[in-house]
Amino acid sequence: MSLLQLSSILIAGMAGVAIFIMLYNRVFLQFKHSRAKLAVSLLSLLGLLTAFGLAGYIWSGYRSLLPALGVLLALGAGEGLRLLRRRRCQGSAPVEDTHRCIRLMQPLTTLDLAVRRYRVPLPGWQGGPFRIVQLSDLHISDRLPSAYYERVADEATAAGGDLLIVTGDMISDLEYLPLLPPFLRRLRARLGVYAVLGNHDWWSDPLAVQSALASAGVVWLANSCRSLPAANGARIRIGGCERPWSKELAPWEAPPENPAEPLILLTHTPDNIFHIARHVPPPAMVFAGHYHGGQIRVPWLGSLLVPSVHGRLFDHGHFMLKGVHLFVNAGIGAAMPRLRIYCNPEITIVDLTM
Figure (cartoon, rainbow, N blue to C red):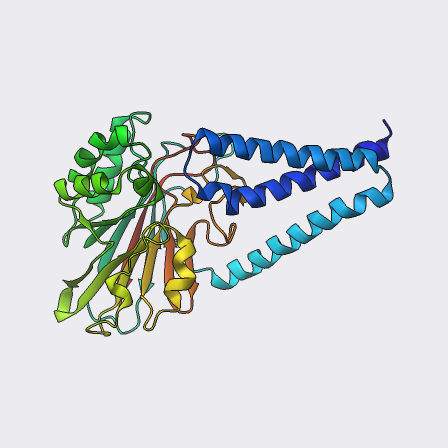
């Protein structure tokens, strides 16, 4: 086999892998985990590698490189445009971060909990200092130590939030539901604990998860919007959005009774942000999770697999879109596979200021 022929096969294979990653992010990751999903994903990868590899082998030569290079250039251009768009939407960095730097010699970060705190001035806010503590994607199970979940709950409570919020995916499998209420009962905040469901909760048993939330004193927000007191006579609203798994119209989408009250909106997937930001008036802040920060990240390159129709656009951190603050939490647990590489689980703390 000549060097040119080998190069043709390798470049064609890279094009096949790139197309598979795009399809996996935007299509396959949206489906419920099952053996059929795994089989279809593997068959798609093998099919793309075989098709592009054979093309590179049969049509070896400089001309044969053009289709594969064209695919790679097109996908690279799309990724470049997303990077520019991401930079335009990039919000502030954390003012405190317990795990700011990558530790190259410690790639496994499954239990290496990070606490990241942001400070956000909210125009017109008269309620004084107000703290929101966010958890997401617990994926609670016995495959991670119970002491780890206890530490997460205790650190989230110790943060002293006015609100403590959980943005979905409490469980991955229904068999672990009994572990959820004891964890939730350890959570405390001045104005209570609030949550929305994620795709795994809907796929498992949404009514059972809602019942577990209620038994632990956690307010489920998908079909309600609450007005809560802050300092100086100010009030703040908190609501939920569970699209696309729930098709019901949430009350926050109706004209608010008092537009002067800023709205804090919980949603599981950040993919909802474009729909949410078009609402008049839009929420002041949106909290989401779902992406796990990629769960497996490459140092300085970032996430590779993100369950989003927008790819890596909003994979993790603070963003601004049409005046709306979006916080995307990297999650607490891990699912498929049950480990994290260069991607810390995290607690997000947001301090509202005047």
